[in-house]
Image (cartoon, rainbow, N blue to C red; front, top):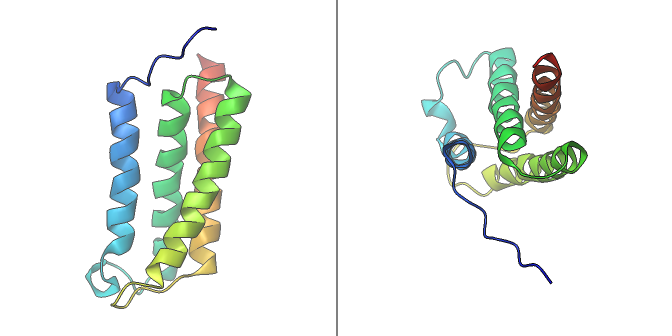
Length: 123
């Protein structure tokens, strides 16, 4: 029975891991330190862009079939988005979970996976 080699940490994979950690850090900052927090639409765009990057980066680094990659990225990305929103409810400063943030995260994730497919098709 063939053994699977451990995943290699390529520059792309390191970037995807860094991006994921950066999302956690960004969503852990006190709300008062986030610039432009009075602009609700701006906040949703930022959430969508963070998860768009998550989707593109993880799609480009995983070594599976396209369908399996998309399923993995969508399932784990949606779980990650939900968990980060719930996590904000436990922070001891002015961060709160927001369903609209989670929906913006999901929209960005779907756009990221879609962008990967479009970019791959154009190549």
